[in-house]
Length: 292
Image (cartoon, rainbow, N blue to C red; front, side, top):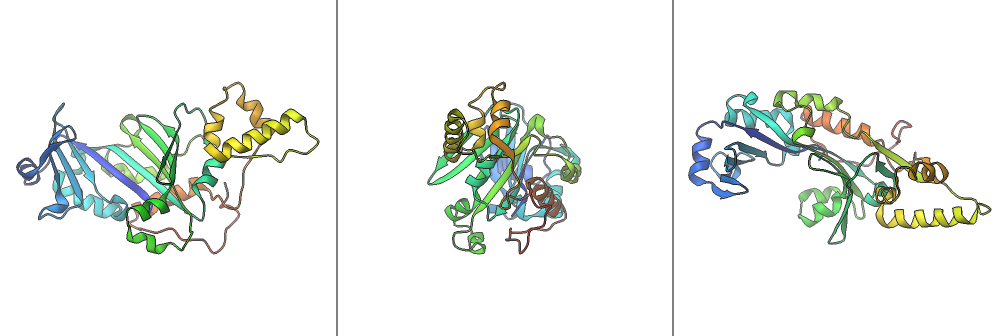
């Protein structure tokens, strides 16, 4: 499932009877006085209410499994909670697309982001996540979605064939990085360039008669990229050094296995906005414009 993967709203007012219910049955946690999962109440709504923030009294509304809802159902769920949708604003929204048949290592070895300071790699139980961009307000992460589904025992695992690769590309926006904060403006995100600065490169094949230093440098780059990804290797060199290295050793990449990620992400968002919930499938053919 792709499109909008997480949605957190902030509001100063929550409608009755939800506010009273949260104050009566909610528990104190996460810097909020009253936290209540509405899916476990008679309302059966996929929402976790965080009421009465300890610092400012603001309420947080977390929509659960929003990727399976689509825009129409999301609005239907929020309306009785807020009375008017304009009373809430978006604090965090995540967008994603899943690439079936592409491994997370393939992606990490081929892509990087310009002018990014923070970069992280997380390894857990054999799975790896590459945070190409990691800041307080904006995150771009690649991770093995197939392993995550299997670890959670998700029924969606049954949609995958044995040894299928499934890589998720996810953009997380928070606070000041959220360009449109009103719920009624969610449809505008289909036209936002969420992957600005993302580039795809591949190592050139160095001829055997190249300079010995070039042969050694190419071997080093290939080994480090295979272990840590292109973004990590790029960050080991200064801004004055990397353009030279890129010019000598790299080409723009157009591999047949890596699809046009920008187009895929835009299509995933459009599907969610139009209430089409999809699970990724391997394409029967690949058109010439489905390349990066």
